[in-house]
Image (cartoon, rainbow, N blue to C red; front, side, top):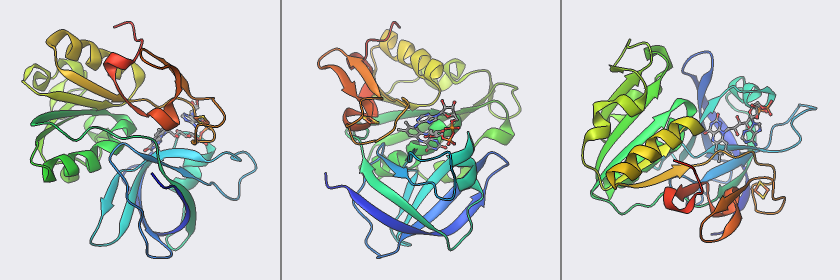
Length: 256
Ligand SMILES: Cc1cc2nc3c(=O)[nH]c(=O)nc-3n(C[C@H](O)[C@H](O)[C@H](O)COP(=O)(O)OP(=O)(O)OC[C@H]3O[C@@H](n4cnc5c(N)ncnc54)[C@H](O)[C@@H]3O)c2cc1C
Ligand code: FES
């Protein structure tokens, strides 16, 4: 798939809470590349002495009517925190689209996300919904205040919520949510590694196909530096940035 280095203008920077923002971007030349759910972009962070490498951020959503690409950003360190502060009208340079995304052939899909891992599931849910898939989302967070974009997810499927403090939805981790006991063709998951392993374990036990999106440390994002490798069943060590970040759990050598 052809990759681009492109300038995007920041049309909006919506602060969801002190840790998270949605950046709405339009290509300066007006031409939005094709992209698939689960792919990501590499963002150039300017005006910083410590963020020489681009930062990988998932494609959160594509608003075709407004020609907007959305990025859901969590302020983790210097690079992402500077994105939270970016002004409307600023220019961001992106390399995109990178990696391979989620599969799109299912009749009933459960999309499970925790924290900033919910990011790629919005475009995935919308795309599956357009393909006629019955979509359910299971979103987890520490408390209700940390649940992100719930109204947006609700446009494309049924939403189940889990919070660790029980303030909204079912109390506990996503793996304890009653939605995990329903029947699905596939579970597609993105979030912290322990959460993805726990979800994968349930999927395997129940004989449900399962895909996870890995967030290995990345530098080039193009399969050149080898800093993101993951050991796989069929192909040995592969670059997550190029052959992933989405993998079927049967390809991963996880002890689950
Ligand atoms: C495929 C992929 C998709 C991602 N999607 C999103 C997203 O949609 N939204 C979002 O907010 N974040 C996303 N991340 C994580 C994001 O890339 C890191 O939080 C960011 O690179 C940290 O950079 P920093 O300068 O803010 O912090 P740093 O000070 O560099 O690091 C802060 C923390 O982030 C970790 N980190 C640093 N660099 C990376 C890296 N290149 N990859 C993974 N973790 C890193 C460090 O181990 C450290 O714990 C994604 C990561 C990957 C690999
Ligand atoms: S990030 Fe360089 S090879 Fe994957």
